[in-house]
Image 1: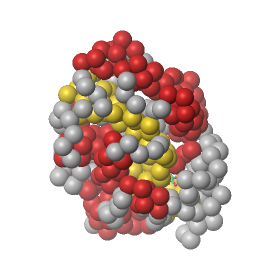
Image 2 (image 1 turned 135 degrees about the vertical axis):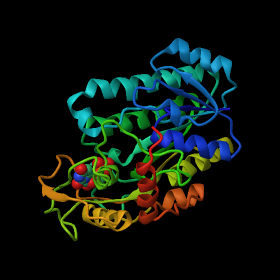
Image 3 (image 1 turned 180 degrees about the horizontal axis):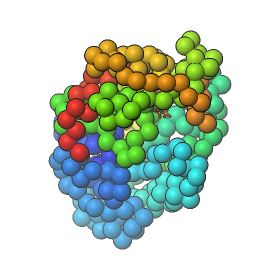
Amino acid sequence: MILVTGGAGYIGSHTLLRLMDAGHEPVTVDNLCYGHREAVLDGHFVHADLGDQQALGTLFESFPIEAVVHFAAFCYVGESVTSPDKYFNNNLVNGLNLLNVMLKAGVDKIIFSSSCAVYGEPQEIPIPETHPKNPINPYGLSKHFFEQILAAYNAAYGLKYVSLRYFNAAGADPKGGLGESHHPETHLIPLVLQTALGHRDEVRIFGSSYPTPDGTCVRDYVHVCDLAEAHVLALSYLLSGAESICLNLGTGSGYSVREVIELCQQICQKPIPHRDVEPRPGDPPELVASGDLARQVLKWNPHYSLEEIISTAWNWYQDPKF
Ligand code: UDP
């Protein structure tokens, strides 16, 4: 069985579906702080916090866990700047707790949700995995530190891991049962589509004088189902006895904020009010992945286009289930 921490969250819940399609039997553990119980469409569910050693110990005693897919973490960059204690406690201390309980139970394989935030300001585009790691906020630092903890546990205790560094996750399950539901919502595509639905007055474009073709920030948007697929492939990779590795998950193509809004207007078939405002602190002009290593090592091939990312998300926001 596979333990999925944070399986009630956005990427976790989509990955659960793919794990089941691939024949795995998942157990979700989630404290439902930000996740949704309704997003766990199948499998066992345990309501617990990763800080609760006793609950985790019981979980590992109750289920024959082979490997862990670890999503549970806080992920708001802005909040991490104002409340670093919250981020280091959950993303590091609770994560470490999980690793220690795993080792005690003899479980030595983990897939970790990392982020392109480990790189900080990019020095080259596309960004390879070897790029220097200079995170510029506590969220990115928490992901970078945890990767280093994984490397130390690998060296000392033989813990095997795949750290997946996501670029901009977006989109929704094409069948309509799952989608993105963050409270508060801070991500571009959900905000633009919620504005199209009239739930918000306008989209604010953070910065229009960046050194990019149209002056707005460029990001590498990757469909959540492509990310889910990468986790299933990473799991097979680890279960086959392969070595630990860190991999970027991005498409290698960048789109500007204006291009995203334009495509959303075409898909929603309506004008979406937007205006330029000041840049958001800490936003680099361009973040685009070099995805070569994941393609080579996992045979991962992201196949959703930006248009499909937006259409599946649009489909979800018109009738969100939670
Ligand atoms: N963005 C924006 N307006 C918003 C939210 C985001 O202009 O209301 C921009 C943001 O500056 C970034 C891009 O959209 O360049 C993607 O932001 P998001 O928060 O979705 O993801 P991030 O790149 O921060 O992980």
